[in-house]
Length: 131
Image (cartoon, rainbow, N blue to C red; front, side, top):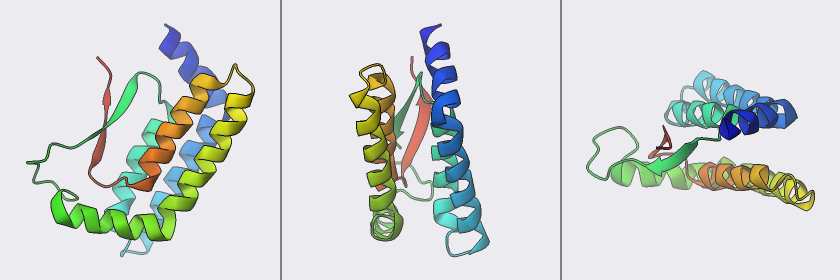
């Protein structure tokens, strides 16, 4: 019940904006064709950004044969970090600091910091429900 309340509050107070921006970014990446490997990562982040409580971000299994695993995934993450990841993560950190200052916003700040960490290197990660 608390997760539901936190998710509703998160969505109302900015989760929808963050999620829409991630969806838009993914769409722009898809249009460029070159950005397709990052498109699906951006859309995964968007789904997490809309409704983060009760979910967690984890690395895919090392023996996974999915695209984005292994050396190819590391290369994609390096390119992402240089061209987009660091400033998207910085924006999430700035928002997290503003939320944490309010004391009441500390749970939201923690989720924004998780989004910042995810924004640094999204390839090879997946989102699953917490047990």
